[in-house]
Image: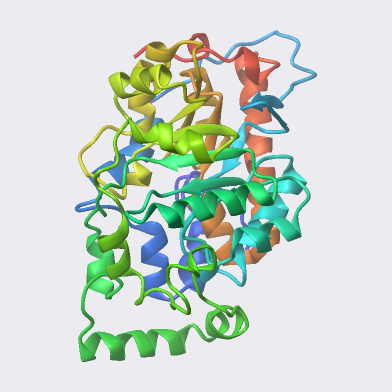
Length: 392
C-alpha cells in the first residue's frame, strides 16, 4: 500500500488526514458521509483539487541552517500560529455532537481562526460562548435580506470581525451522491428502509449525534426556519431563498451592515479577483466550493497563481479546496496564498474522534509543514515563494 493512502484496517493510530477520512467513513451513516465526501456531477473537479496538488514538486535543498522554523503569520490583521483556517462547513453538527463547538475549541487551542457557517447546527452564539477568540462568520445572501442582516448583527454582537461572503452559490450544484441517498429530492419507501437499516448499523452515531446531539436544527436560521430539522426541511427552502440575483453592487449593502473585514469566497477567475479589489474587499478566497458546485472548472491550486498575480499586494489571497496535508499548505503558500482554509479534513476528524481528532489533524499539518520547510531549506512560511517548487 502506498504510504500516502489511508491504512484500511486502522489498527494503529491515525497518522494522516487520509486516515481520518477512513475513520469517518466507518463511523457515519452513508448519506451523512457522502454529504461530506461528495462533489458536483461526476466529481471531476473534486478529484482535480487533489490530483493537481500531487503534480507539484518541491526543490529539495541541503546544507542550510533550518534549526529554527516559523509557521506563524498574519491573516486579515490576526496573528495566527499556523497558516490554516477551519473553513465553514454546513450541517457539521450532523457529523458529531455539537461539532461546530468542538472544532472551534480545537482551532482556538491551535491558535487559528474557526469560521462559522450560516448553515451550522450550532448557532453563532453557542460557538462564541465556548471560545475566547472571536470566530469568523460565513454568509449566504438570501432573497429576504432581513435574514442576512440579522445574521450579521448577531455575528458582530458576539465579537466577529471577519465575514466570509460565499459568492459561488447563486444556485445549488447538482450533487449526484445526495440525490441517490435521498438528501436532495424525494425519498422512496425503499430508500427510507435502506436509511433505517443503515442507522441500525451505526448505532454509536445515533446515540452520540441523533439523540444526544439535539437540537438538530439550523441554529443560525431559527427565525427563518423555526424548528426545522436536518436535512429534509431545508432543501426546498435553500432552492427558494438563496438569491441568484446578487451582484457586485450588493457589496455596498453589505458594507452598510458589516463593520469588519470582508473576504469573498468562491473566486476562480483573475478578472473577478481584480473586480473584488476594485470593490475594496480585504481578501479573496480561491475556491470552487470543494468541487461541490460547478464541475469541470479548474482546481483551486491551478487557479491560484493567476489570481495571486492579478491582485498583487492589493488584497490578501487565501485558498480553499483539496488540502489534505501540510505539504499541500506549503505548495499553496509558495504559489501565492497567505493561508489555506480546510473543510473536509476537520469534518472527517470531528466525525471520527471529536474535538481530539481536530486537535490531532492540526498537529499533523503542523508537523508536516515543519518537515517540508526543513527539507526545502526555508525557515519562515512568510518567505515561501515559487522558488521552492520545481518548474513544470
